[in-house]
Every structure is written in C-alpha cells, then in structure tokens.
Amino acid sequence: MSKKQFTTHHGMVDILPGESEKWVYLESVIRDVAKSFHFDEIRTPILEQTELIARGVGQLTDIVSKEMFTFSRGDDNYVLRPECTAPVARAFVEHRLDQRGGIQKLFYIGPMFRAERPQKGRQRQFHQFGAEILGSSNPAADVEIIQFMMAVYDKIGIKNATLQLNSVGDPSCRLAYKNALQDYFRPHLDELSEISKTRFDKNPMRILDSKEEEDQPLLEYAPLISDFLSDECRTHFDTVKHYLDNLGINYTLNPRLVRGLDYYTRTAFELTSTDLGSQDALGGGGRYDLLIEEIGGPKTPAVGFASGMERLFIACDALGIEMPVTSIPDVYIVTRGAKAQEWAVKTLGLLRHQGKSATMDLGGRSIKAQLKDANRSNAKWCIIVGETELETSMFTLRNMKESTENQYPLNEIFELIQ
Ligand code: HAM
Image (tube, rainbow, N blue to C red; front, top):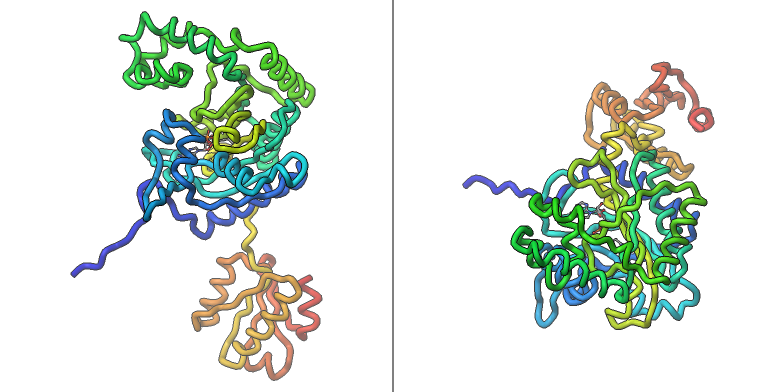
C-alpha cells in the first residue's frame, strides 16, 4: 500500500525557514510602530461564535454569506475568525475595557480565515496586522489609525501606495442616499449583474463595489454619498482631510469606496498598490461607531484598520525590497571526536550566555561537511576543535568572511568575536 502524502489545505501555506525570518522582521517593525503610537497588544482566540461575526460583519457581506469556515460542537457554533475587528469589539464588551479608563488603543497580529477562491494575494488562511481605537469619535483618532498603517509601510520601504479615502456617512445620511441609489438603479434593474440585483433591495451601496463588467457603465453616473452627508459627517470628514493635509499624507478621494464589511460609518479608507495585481488592497479600515452597540455593548465610537501581511510581502518582492535576515549565527563550532563535542556543548552554553547566537553540527558529520554547513549558515566565525586543540588549549578561530584563521586560547577568542 502506498503511503498517503499529506499536504496543506488549498489556500493555506506553510511559512518555512528562510521565509519566516521576514515575518519576524515585519512583526518587529509593527511592534516598534505600535510602541511609538502607544498602542497595546490584544490577542483574541482564533475561534469565535458564528453569531458574533454574522452580526458584527453583516449577514449580507461576502464574508458572512459565503466565506466563513464554521463548525458546531454540542450547542456551540464556531467560526474561524475572518477578521479581528468584531473579536476585538467582543473582547472590549466582555471585559468591560471601557472601565479600564481612557480610550483603548489596541493592535493585533495574527491569522484570519476566509473560504475564498485562492489566487495571488488571496489565501484561505492569511495574516493581518491591525489597530483599533475604541471610545473616541475624534477625527484625530481616524488620522492616528491611518498614520499607524502608513508608518509600517513607510518603515518597510513601500512608498508608492495610494491612500483612497471616503466618508460613507451614518444611518441618517444613508437613508436618503439609499433611496437615491435605488431610484437611480431601478429603471436599469435588468441590466445589473445577478449579484448586484441581490443587493438592490437591502444594501444598494454595495452595488458600488461591484467588479462585474455589466455594472460598470451604470456605476459611472450613480449618485455619490458625498452629496448626501449630514453636516456632522461632513465636518468630521473635512477635519480628517485637513489633518492629513497638515501631515503631508497624500490621499485620493474615492466617493465609490464602500468597503466589503457592513459596520463602517463615516471615514472609510483603503491603501492600494499597483504592484499587487488584481487583489490590489494592501490594507483598509475606517470608523465603526455602531458596531459595539450592535453586539450588545455600550455606545462606543471606534475606528481601525487591518492590513494583509502576505500582500505586503508581494509588494516588497515587486519593488525589490529585501528584509534584513536575522537568523545568521555569530559562531559555528566545528568538532572532531567525542571529547571535542563535549567541549563544544559546554562552550556553546557560555557563548549563548554572553548573548551570542551559536550553533554546532548535530549530525555527526565530517569536518569538511561541518565547514560547508557553517558556510551555508553564513556564520561569522568558526571555532574548530579536535584532540590537539584540547591538549594545547589553543583553538582555531576562522573568520568566515575573510577566510583567515589563527590559533588562540579561548578567553582571547571570546574577546575577538565581540
Ligand atoms: P478587510 O478589507 O476585509 O478589512 O481586510 C483587510 C486586509 O486584509 C485587506 O486589505 C487585504 O490586504 C487582507 N486580506 C483580506 N482578505 C484576504 C485574503 N483572503 N488573502 C490575503 N489577504 C487578505 C478588515 O478585515 C477589517 N477588519 C479592517 C478594519 C479594522 N476595519 C476597522 N478596523
């Protein structure tokens, strides 16, 4: 019987050594940015209650209607989280974080799951970093969230992305807008794509997000939300734009940007890049002033963003940006014989205690193979030890980059490799 070969599920990928170092680096950049903006980390479970996501993200969205990985166990319905804003809002309500004092500024990094058709930049398990400010209706909070997002791309070196900006208003502006959209589309219902027809009654704003070819000519002349904003929503939006202008953050106004999740109110934004292909959104977010109440919490205005980490790496590849690789050992000890190995085990301990990254061969390989391995690992130094070295207490120290070597006592070696 032939042995079964197991593989990952479609759209889910292993992050292998050689790749994982990039992730560690990106995560360190995100943490540095979070620290400078004074955001605290939050880690929520991978599994949430299905109803939380259905209510939070919205029944009519693609995510809830067709992309959730769900299962039940006993009376409980589980969903692999497709995003982290509803989970953070749930944690805020569950742990009464509003009583922790002040406005909550939280960030997260982690895997999300959507049962989408995989393609470049679109996976079924993907990773997001994101940030949320809970408890502030101040336009300065919207700007801080946008700045946080942009700061990560800036530090990584992605500077050619476009920030698309819109205000989707609040329920008071949207009622009139929804009517205007329906009045506009009604005479053309037959010409709309099937998916847009299903959105006509309950959520005509989502028609604006359509990528279907037959919808495009109609979308061009559809009414714009900017003509329906209430005075409060308009003032909020003007202030956001004014602050962005003051900061020199460029943006493109896109009155058709509606985003694919239902919880947004007022500010909505997306960072897009032409380096990504058809999945062109590096990240996106906006204000969601009603979500926390919607899931049973106190009235709490909030704003946030999330960015796809795989897409950030795709943009880096396209732009030739390389992340610093951190897994290079300072020292590789090459040994000949059992005594030398015993010495190496002890010496590795001393080196590591001094904060050095140090390693040795664990496969019983020949000296030649060990040196080859040391070379491949890009180790900066090699200590070569055999019986003679142990007898004389003089060890060979090889500078791998310069291909030079000399013999020294161990204490001098420790000084030389500092
Ligand atoms: P989203 O636009 O659904 O927003 O996702 C944010 C980012 O996650 C996207 O721009 C994209 O880079 C990445 N992404 C989404 N789906 C996939 C996928 N299947 N494969 C690879 N990358 C993907 C949200 O998730 C909101 N929670 C953002 C937010 C936070 N709004 C307020 N706070």
